[in-house]
Length: 415
Image 1 (cartoon, rainbow, N blue to C red):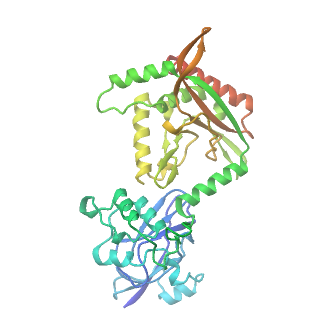
Image 2 (image 1 turned 45 degrees about the vertical axis):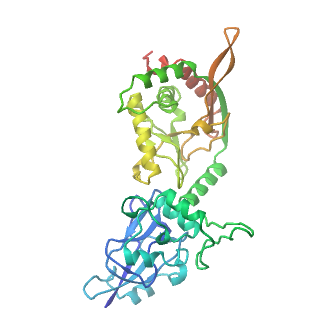
Image 3 (image 1 turned 30 degrees about the vertical axis):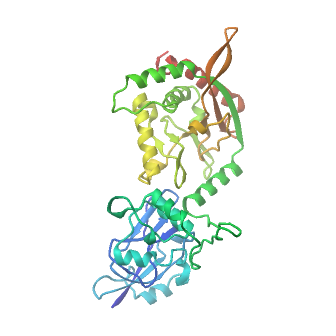
């Protein structure tokens, strides 16, 4: 037998460390080469790291929420002779002594007690990363959940059904849930995507002086056009919401307000104005808010934009979006759909300089040409980085966007 020291590999794009989201094994487990070892999160995406060799897990470094540097010891395997060699060519003990001390083996106690053993006996439980995270936060061993999907895959409904009949978790789990009938308090460690969201939003509000501007828009004509185009579309084309129209109008508007299509490089103290319009589309997912990027919106027609929004949103919700699809936006749009309310105060997606929010569209009384009539009205809620965009320019930009939305021909006419 020999020992193999596995270090956190370089995950690309300048990654210097990664946060452990979930271990799929525990010390003492047997694991096959290329089987899922650990799920880690970088600043760009969540990555599932496979085992580099087959063998028995001797020790693991860190638990969920801990950060591990690239090149630092991640796991030690006991392998058959010849099955592998230590990553740095040294015996495991020497390799460990040459690096910073690792966390105690029991740092992986956030896993359900028998989940890894169950996976080792019968293969890994089939389900989505979002459901794994939900189960982990609730202290549920997925090996004990009956799956109704293909090949026994656990669906969201399966987990919900299990939770209805579930009592308290074993004492070994890191997340503590007080059983129902007592205090009914749940402690959830903030890790993974939720931690990243919290850090980025806190940083944005702390460092960016937000200038909020809300404007009412009469979208009656736009609604008529939307309904007409949806009625005329082919079965293969996605239905049009307000969002694709907003992006088309935004692209035209930014030609006159290039200062709003920019990013701020704080490290260099440099503003970057972009010719291409890469629109971030804020998308609610089971794991939290993600912002996939619709690239080069200025060169795409309306229906292509609609199709791309649908594709990117689905990829974000199912954790299939690539790193490049989740970064590089120059301005963001956000919509709560039917939950849009009257107004909102969206937080800027740093390092961008502006974000446009779409609120709910409703028919209500309005004065038109001196008479009271029913019009479909919608508010746009926007936020701008007041360090670089003056209030006058922000208001003028939204007014120009409003004009195009109220008179849809202006979106497509070359004037």
